Length: 543
Image (cartoon, rainbow, N blue to C red):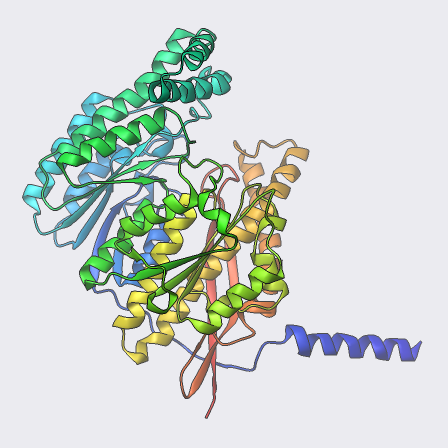
């Protein structure tokens, strides 16, 4: 018995020192990166991906992102207070370097309410006239305005419309295909599905895209000077009424500069990166490497464009450029889009490890078509001890456009700042970038891919609706998520992020020595979470 206890104690100590105990780095306080510009942001809505994430990327880019008071913004189904937002915009625009403005926030009260749509023609005209007035009053501000083409699905809480969700989607796709191909059989199918939808619901659905199309036309032809205008297409497919609006918007841009992009939530982040690159007169070159060659041509769920087309779109919007030569690239972007036909293996982990060995800035997009762990690369990276803390950028959330925009924004900002800042500031820059990456890992990978489906089941077993939580249900969801993320955060730190230096000089190696996280649900549903990540850093002298 004593031998067994001795062996057990020895095994525990061996595990602790070999696998769990972090390097003995001395605590170090890294300075905060000072901002050199200011950006006023009226976000798409109040979710952290539209508010907190742009602020964090702004911090990396050296711009202070200023948001309206949270009470002025929307909260799930409650629209934003548009009158207060207009006054806030007028009162706070002076002396700002940049302004990034969501038309959907000021017209409809946020993204969800733009699907109803809440704002009518009068609110659209007011927004357009206000943009003219503000640019005339504050001509030194660099403006970016973005508008979203509604997604193919109708609003979740729009009844009885959502009872005809499938019929409306079929109608939208057949309408677009009929106009594109002129096929008689498609026309018959269109008439058949149209007859099954109540006319008042069909009229409302059609008018949603008609009103949006008219607004985008006016926005893209408005006599504004030196303004970046972006039209984003929310979740869709290869055909549908959203695609018709996208194609129309491309025609409208022939008379004026504008950018038509796939996606919605990530646009503010990409515009922050675009403003930074333009201010630095820096056009980084990005080389793409796919986990499998065929990934360039696949369509991920809820996307109206292929993976390759979406990447080219986001790179152009950010103000970067493509290159096929890794040696000439500022950034190498590795893309995994796992699906039924492809699951990453050790070979892909080795490929990424080799890129980290050979190139300074390596970024990763890691997605699963079926939202399952086996289709992701990240588990293999952790299994084979690939140092994830060396990544310049990472994203793997929701749709491919969301992830592509986020990872490209982070990568180009980080690469630019590495060129710009002094050697004394680089440890703080690398630490801030690692903090952003760690938060994305906790959100995109651990919460969204590993835990969210479990959380929904746990809530439903207790009688809660995961998309309309009561206060008690919201408290329970937060507590269950907190427990899970705390455990996974410790594992991520001790098994990977904290085991190797994230930055080194000739004299010092810098380590992540601690990582704690607090969790909250920004809305009374589990589709997204808010995270507050607190890191600690240390260094080991190498001389």
